Length: 228
Image 1: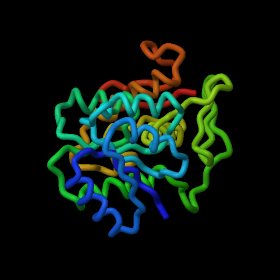
Image 2: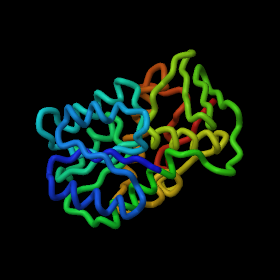
Image 3: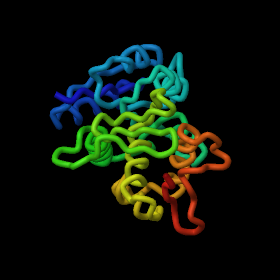
């Protein structure tokens, strides 16, 4: 059964979300503070993490940064009252995969959870090449792993999906609208700026010089393309 870790210090909200998620046949673990959430987030059997940013002891930003630094690539859905763009940019830049602002509808949250799990899981029936290469990068779609110069690169699930979307075009341009449709499934509150933020993270992790990218290129006023 799919296991979700909910890191939330508001007892009433945590109880309500656990009930709603369990009604969808998910197993739900709850952590009420940052230190406990970090320890449980390192578990290999957790399929998704729902993370509040305002936590006692260790805030969600520090917790998420620590998880990604440890190589934990579990999808993370950030849940917070902080709705400003700067907060979203910061969360995405350190490895968040999605973002829901309080107050929110439970049905919306469940839909986001299911979408993240679909993207992070294996794509049944999808034909994938053994290995894709460009520059010093090797991408294995089946195992969802990326190596740069022989060293494993930790990509968040959304970053990996974005990279695959570019690779599959064989050098053709992908518009921001195309990428929003394929990677974010046209979520109504996801702006094209979100694509730019994730592209910047891919460049930082994969390009020799992210200020002068050689592979993940911008096509002015259109979108992006990948140059092998």
